[in-house]
Length: 301
Image (cartoon, rainbow, N blue to C red; front, side):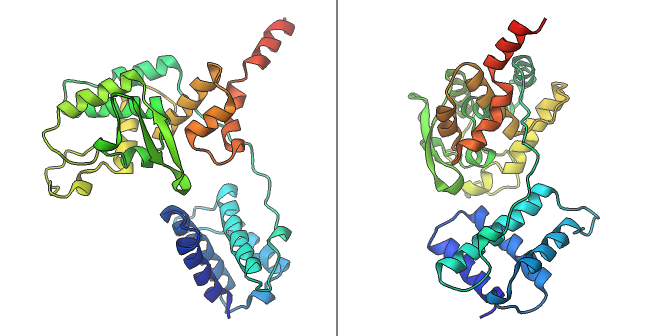
C-alpha cells in the first residue's frame, strides 16, 4: 500500500482506537495532507528516507501561502511531530519505513508568557459597565477566566448544572479529554450568580449570546463561541488602555503566575492547569522565581 493509504488508516486509528480529540485529528489531517501534497506521487513507506524528509523540511521552511505568509519554526515543528507520530504507527504495526527516532526536531526559542499585573487586572475588571445588559455576563467571564485558569474552549463548554456555585468547584475535560477539578474564587461565584439572575431562560450553556436572530429552542446556538469570548476580553482590554495583547490565555497565564508568586508548588499548578508535562508549566518560573530576585537584591549594589 502507499503512504497515502496508510495515512488514512493512521487517522482512523487515532480517532477510534486512541480516541484522540477532534482538534488533534484536525491537526494531524492538516499536517499530513501537506506531507502528501509535498510527495506529489504515490510512494510506499519503505521508500521513505532521510533525504526525502530533509527535502520536506526545506519545502516547509520555504513555504508561502496565498497571502505570502511563511510558516514559523513552531508550525514547521508541528508538521514534523505529526509525521513522526505517523511513522511510530507504522513501526508499531510492523510496516517497514523510516524510523521516527532518526528525525530530529530543531531547537526553538524558549517560550515566554505575557501576564497582567494586579493594577492591569483591576483596570480590566472595572472597565465593565454592570448597568449594561451584557455587563454582568462579561464581568463574570473575565473573573472566571482569571480565577480558574480555564482555556477559552473549556469556558465556552460550561453548562449551568455543571458548575457548583455553593462548593465553588466543578470538573472539566481539557486537552486529550483529561478530567480535572476546577476551583472558583468567591468573587467569581458571586458574579456568576448575579449574571444568572439576569437570565430568563433555562438553557444549558452557562454563558450565552444575546443574538435576536438565534433560535432560542436550540441551546447550542445560544452558547457563546470561542471567538466571541476572545472578542469580549479584547474589547475590555482596549477600553482599559492595556497596551499588551490580552486574550483569554493571558488571563490563564496571569492565574498561573499569581499562584507561583504566592508560593504554590509547580506540581500543583501543573495539575490545576491541566498540563500533561511539567515542562509546559515551567515556562512560568522565569517570571516567578523569587529566590533569584532575593539573590540579586542581596549581592547587587
